[in-house]
Image 1 (spheres, one colour):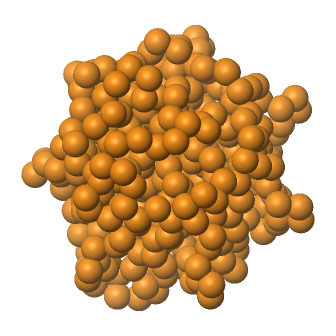
Image 2 (image 1 turned 45 degrees about the vertical axis):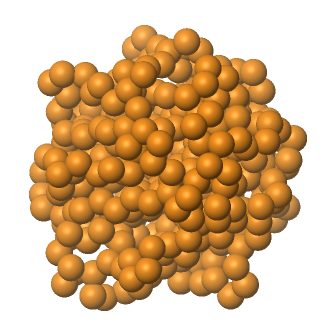
Length: 361
């Protein structure tokens, strides 16, 4: 991940995955501000007013009038579990879901690898292991949330502490000493974020563009999401704060510049050079790079409960348990398998996608 970020069009080159940092688990990683049962944007990506199976309506604007609560630690015992399906680029084995993997409550798609959190609090990884990013630490248990970045991984434990492994070149896999009371995590290429129970944010790792320099006085945060070299935070009033690289090479629309007047947000996801947010009416707003139409939200993306921003493509989970995809499709990353329903979580990697399909209890 030490490679300098280049022009966005270069993402289409064969080697782009080597420099891509994906925000893992936007579709189930940072706790939802309106639901306390989920991990990093929730294992089921459920928001207030939506059932874990995605059968209920999304919140109305009036429901957003009150302050969004800071989430509690995820309770995996209450999360819907299921099996994992994957599609898109599988050259590094990132779409080769381990045989027999069941009872999954959360997923996270790193650059070219995948992570799954099981209902027993253990973690499974597959795909690229060039930096040990899928070498789960021996004896790791009691995990309630996961997040895979470029080539490093994070796990949030039930005691509010964070464990990291994989590439630590910039310190991104080494949580600050004494870090505790964490309720959400987000890993990117060279930096990591943690949301604490008091609504404050901790960041560590690379800071070449200010991505780890949390704005002074930032508080009342209910969700975080780490992009390539920028960061997002959702506040309890439904507004979004961004910091880090505002205009990366090749991006004409400020990726770390929040659109004027944006409010009523209930979920956030930072990608490589673009951002997606879900509003309280179930609509999606995107900004930043748009080389492959990754922020050109289709009309079918309504009633959305969660989003995931991949390399140059996007996913949205609808309240009916179906998935909408748009943007680049050179690796079939936006070709959602026919008949996919009952989805409770999504995530997007560099050029691959993951989903958890609910299993009957």
